[in-house]
Length: 173
Image 1: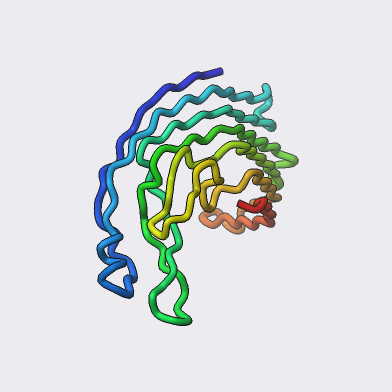
Image 2: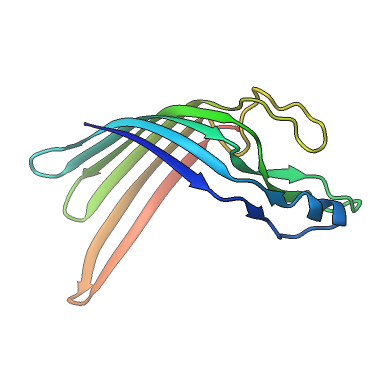
């Protein structure tokens, strides 16, 4: 079992991706981001090392979080432009579990599940004037499930073959 308390800082800058106007170029700068992260979790490995379980509960408190946001293009028919922006303060909390099981010497399987019930802007109005306070952060699904079956074998003394069949599900953001 473990507990982690950490803080982090990411500097601001200028995102110079595809920009279609001087106005969007003015919006391309962003400020620094700070985070305080709390995490508690555990790890389990059985005696014969065929079963491994990792789990965690986490809480992230951001100040000035940097998030990619879609902005409409000023050119008719052009796709939206993604800009890195400070979205003010936000909080994210949830849980995660990963299970790995070795079925045989050649086959192993994994299963992962993440649940993020809260991932919201604390207070934010985008550059177009849209109120996003208490709305879910973009590209942050509430639930993620993944699983895989992997086969590994030695072809010759110096070559190893690995084949994996996987599945990933993400709920709507």
